[in-house]
Length: 163
Image 1 (cartoon, helix red, strand yellow):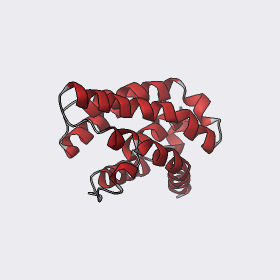
Image 2 (tube, one colour):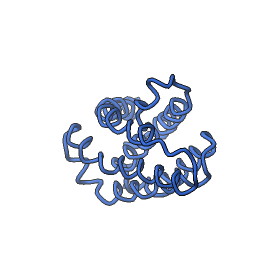
Image 3 (tube, helix red, strand yellow):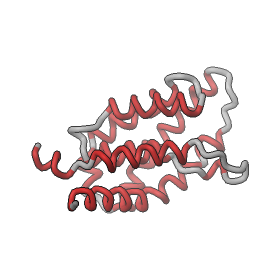
C-alpha cells in the first residue's frame, strides 16, 4: 500500500482530468467533430488501470456526472455510460497493465464501444438526435490516441514522483 501511495501523483491526476474536460468541451467544426477522441473515458481508464485500489467505479461516476453537467446532456447518461466500462477496467486492471500499449488499446476498444453504445441507446430512448457517426466515430481516434495518452500520463507520474 505504501508503494502505491508513493507512486500516485495527485497533481498529475487533477491536471489530466482538467485537461480532458477542457478538451471535451472545445467546439470543433462539423467536419472533424466525429473524430474527437473520448478523452474523459481514456483518462478514467488510465487511472483505474494503474491504481485500481485508489480509483474505480466512483471515479467513473463522478467524471460522468461532471461531463453531464459540462456538456448539458441528460443528467446521468455519462454516469451510466462510464460506470459500466470502469467496472470492467477495475476488474481486469492487472491484465491490462501487463500488456503492451497497442494491445491495451485493442483490449479497451470494446469498453469504449460499450461507452459509445450506452450513450447512443440513451439518446435513442429519450428521443434525442441519436447520430451514430458522432457516437461511434471517435472509437478509431480513441484507440489511436491511447498509446500517446498513456505515455504522457506515465511521464507525468514519473516526473512528479522524482521531484
